[in-house]
Image (cartoon, rainbow over all chains, first blue to last red; front, top):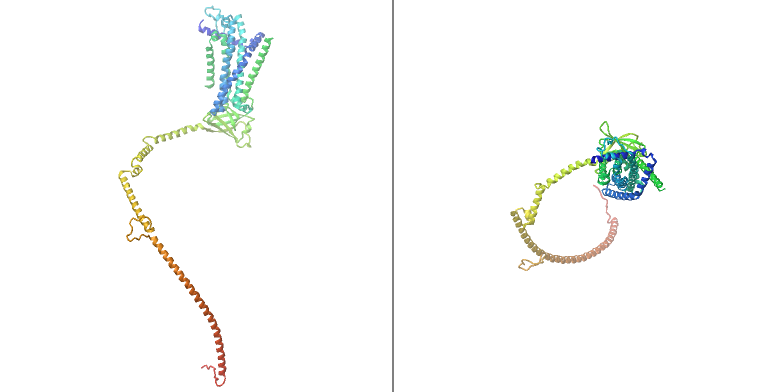
Length: 261
Length: 322
C-alpha cells in the first residue's frame, strides 16, 4: 500500500467516523447513548483529580511569573490581558489536548486496535481501500462513495462512544482549566477582594472580540479532531507521536497567524 | 448496577460541563456589554491611530464605556463610536471634555473629564471633538534637538576646536608653572622681562633694607631706645621724647609756682577787700558826719540869715531885673 493511498484511506475513515460522531441520528439508539455515557464516565472521571492538580500547578506558576514580571516593569495594568491571552487562549488548549491524547485517546486507540485482532481499525473497516487497484472494479474508492459493509458499520459504531468521550473530555478539561486559571489570575492580581471584578471583567470583554472567539473555537475544534480521530483512524499516527505533535503545532501556528496578522 | 451509577455520574458531568460552557459564554457576552443598554457618543478625531474596537473610555480611572466602531467621516476625520452604559452615563455632562492620549508604553487611552457635574447630562448620540495628546509625537523633535546638541558637543570637543586649543594652552601654561621659573615666569612671559622683574625685586629688597635702617634711626631719635647705628660724639643719647618729658616737668614746676603766686595774690586781694570794706564803713560815717556838718551849716546859715535880717546888717536882698 502506497503512502498516498494510506493517507487517503485514513482521511476517508476519519471523515466517516467524524460524520457519525457529530450526527445526532447516531444517538437515537439507546445502546449507543448508554455506551457513550459509560465511556465518558469511565474515561473522564478517573483523570479529573490528577488533571485539576496539574492544571492548578501550571496556572499558578505561569500566573506568578507573568504577574511578577509585569509588576517589575511597572506594567501591572496589562497583567490580566497577558495572562488571558497567553494562558487561556494558547497554553490551556494545547496542554489539555496533550493530556487527553496521552491519557485517553492513545490508550483508547490501542484498545480498539487490539479488539480488531491486532489489525488497524482502518484495515478492518475499509478493506476496499487496502488494495484499491488490485481489488477489482466493484470496490472503487472515492469521496462520494463510501460503501461500508456491516462489519465496518459495527466497528464505526463501536468507535463512536470512544470519540465522543474523548471530545467531551477535551471540552470539560478546557473549561475547568480555564476556570482555574482565571480564578488564580484574579486572586494573584487583585487578591481576595471583590473590587477588582469590574476591571477584570472589562479586560476579559476587551480580549474576547468575535474574531478571537471564532479563532479560539476553531483551534480547539481542530485540536480535538486531530487527537481524537487521527489515532483511531491511522495506525501511523498511533505509533508516531511526533506526527501528532507536529499537526498540533501546525494548528497552533495557523491560529496565531490568524489572530495576530 | 455499577454501570448505571457510572452512567449517572457521566450524565451529571455532562450537565455540569454544559452549565460551565453556557455560563462561560454568558460571562464573555456580559463582559463585552451585550446585556447593557447603552447610549452612544461620537468622538471626532483627526487621527484614530491607537484606538481599537473594545477600547475603554475611562473617567477618573474607571471604565465608563467602550469603543464600538471606528469609521471615517465624509470630512476625512475619524469617528469613534463609544457605547456608554446608561448606568454610567450620569458621569458625562454637556460640558465634559474627551481626550485621546498616547503614551510611550502601552496603547492609546480615551479619557473623559467632567468638571461641572451640575450641568445637564450628555444627550444620546452626542458628537464631541476629542483632544489629542501624544507623548511619542515629541520624540522626533527631541531626537532632532539631541542630534544638534551632540553635533555641537562634537564640534567643541574636536581636536581642531577652540576648546581643545584652550586646553592645550592651559597644558603649556601648567607646564611652565611646573618649570624652574614657576608662576613668575608664566606672568613675565619672556626671559628679559623676567630678568627685569627680578632686578626690580632685588631693588625693592634693598629699598626695604634701607628703609628698615631709616626706621630704626627714626625710632631711636624719637624714643631713644634700641641700638644706635652711629652714637653722637657728644654723648647726647637722649631722644626727643625724653627732652620733651623734661620740658614738661619744668613747665609743671613753673605752673606750681604760678599757682602759689596766685594764692598769695588771693591773700592780697582779700586784704584789699577788707580795706575796701573798712573804707566803705568810713565813708558811711563820713556821710553822717557830712549830714551833721550840713545841719550845722544850715543852722549857721539860718543864724546868719536871721542876723542879716536884723539891723544893722539888714540888706535888701531883692533882685532888680534890668
